[in-house]
Length: 100
Ligand SMILES: [Zn+2]
Image (cartoon, rainbow, N blue to C red; front, side):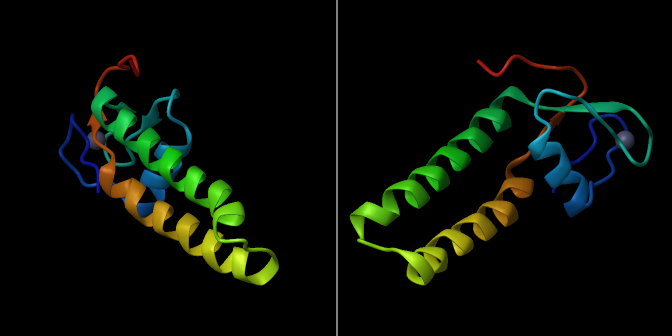
């Protein structure tokens, strides 16, 4: 889980998910109130995870000729895996860093 760069506290899973979904906006640390941003390096890594997941869900349907329930059996686990992996890939920064 990400660690606050100001106070050093580990963020909760829920805070990390919220942070991952709100890349551009700073999220205040629940412990010290300091705004924290996703670091440029981990922002790129998180976006790569999103792209790989999106491609596997979008391309999984025509590649494996899936539809209906089998398609959901591919898509839902991929989304769940992303939701679990992303919080662990986040590193925080005290300042907003450009993504590129
Ligand atoms: Zn803090």
